[in-house]
Image (cartoon, rainbow, N blue to C red; front, side, top):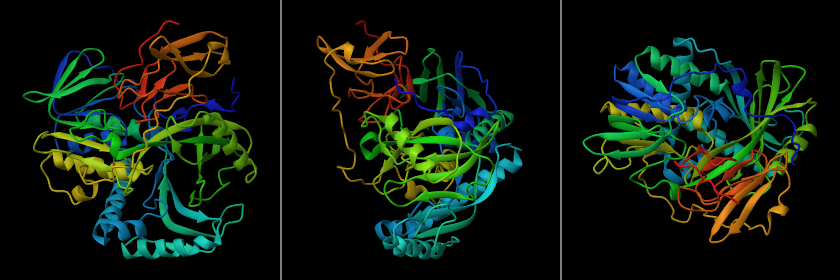
Length: 492
């Protein structure tokens, strides 16, 4: 049994408005159906509603409770050291497009917060990328120069304003942070006020095309549209396969109670391995220090609980924090060139089909820019970021690391309370976990996406796919795609 401190869940959800949109009922039609109620989906929806289009958003669970609502929620154009890399690998013109897209995305968020009166704890903060290694000062100086070349305000400074020793930092002033779950609740409200429809607890299980696009939900209800947008973190369907173009990655996050709101003044990310990220936040009881640990490939770590323990130790060695109040895992997808895949993958064979994925953990500004771009594509308008995010661009075939190599347990007696593992029962691999009362629960260990063997996450008590990042609850129900169907029930 893992006795991890803190409440399991994102601190942002504790103060966000609870949404109560109904599930889909009957047969509905709109010009555009958006699958996924995160930052990409709701940004696309609101832009289209503002243009007078008819829009339906279907969210599998609850608005704000998934990837966006579990992020660090930094509204910033500083994405660690990105601009020198883009200039050197994809050219100055594309690097300029990336800077412009993210600057526009950040500005759009702030404008909508003002325009729609969204209460989401928006605060202006500087952003810092820091190093503890003197050998990396040159990297920071080069990044500052590259950012300035692209019109961004950036400065290399001697040390970060942190209570431990650093050897230098990259400063982007006048950035911002917010509560992402509250922001999404505000976007959903604005969509409805503008004539759009939002449905929750409505997982899309079938997406296909006949005379127009058709989406069928797990309740058996059907939606029809001329355009469909798949905004589900990893695409659950695409005419151009995305699973092997991306690498699923996760990180652990913890929120610590502090004595005041100024334990750190700014948003911080380390550029040394293992990378960690810091910012202040708050819940209903007061200020919090929010810390993120280094990334790891989803489903490829058999002891996620140890990552929480390591992160807590690292924070307590550097900050006078009090109790751990919240803890959670979040997932994203990396791309080889560090730029998202978004847009229309195959406009000839699948006209009206749009996707967004692979945000490399910088989905707040990038996701907003991608949603703005997709709305333009749906409206047949030109957009300057189509080439930047092109989902059909070339990629290295060896980037994705498929790791379907789950170790097999010998006997259920090897499973302690709070733990899980995979057993072989006849010709079938079975995912078994034992609850705190000692009862055993079993589902198929075969991911319903591509058939890989799932791994037990001993911190979140989920079954995580080590191949393409699907995450299932302990009972086998889908939390994150690309899987659309639950793990099958099994009798031991």
